Image (cartoon, rainbow, N blue to C red; front, side):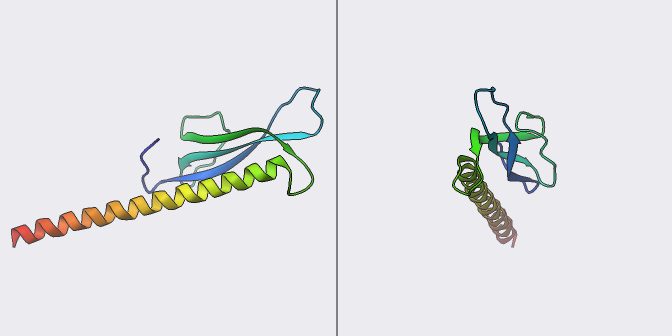
Length: 110
């Protein structure tokens, strides 16, 4: 995985799945993508400015909240929220360690 800076975040992306004519109904792909903060995610296949973390492919999009696409979307949102929280905690821990190192180096000088 990519090392996170302040300018990266995990986002959820949904795209239409092309299925053969044997499948009736609408199908979607749901994915969690690491991208630069504020950057528009174009597709799940574009890897120039983003990293695809996980994809749920060919999920049936029904008319209720119990369909496969709704379940995959909720799982993707939970994963993105968890990864963003972890990256925020890591960033705060890193900043605290840097502050401790700076403080200890000042104490050595005094």
